[in-house]
Amino acid sequence: MIEMPSTLPAGETTFAVVNTGVVVHGFEVEGQGIERAIERIDPGASDALTVTLRPGTYTIHCPVENHRGEGMEAQLRVIR
Image 1 (cartoon, helix red, strand yellow):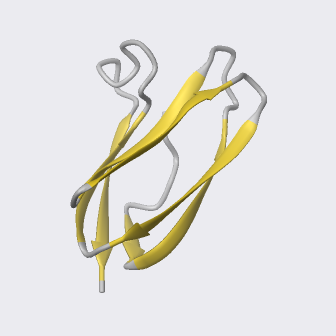
Image 2 (image 1 turned 60 degrees about the vertical axis):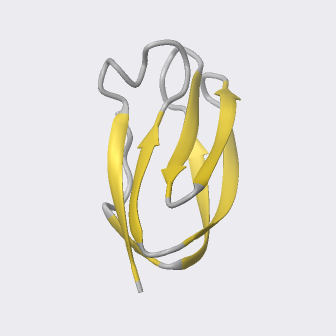
Image 3 (image 1 turned 90 degrees about the vertical axis):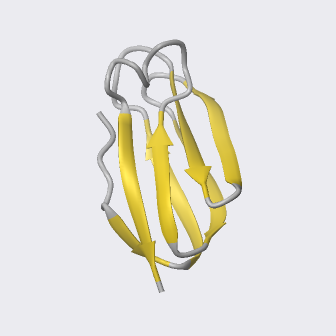
């Protein structure tokens, strides 16, 4: 499960990601010409990803194996 706001303001944003699970996960932001990821976050570990978001819709998901297909995905709306 990805827990985060569904709406954010445009501009530079840092996603602080904590893996509270028991298996490896990742974190990816896709949309509006951006595709940036943290490929691996070990259980109990954390990492951060800074991106500049323009207004529009983005997909946030876990890029590890089939985690996205198992529901580890969220939509993010960026507003002015």
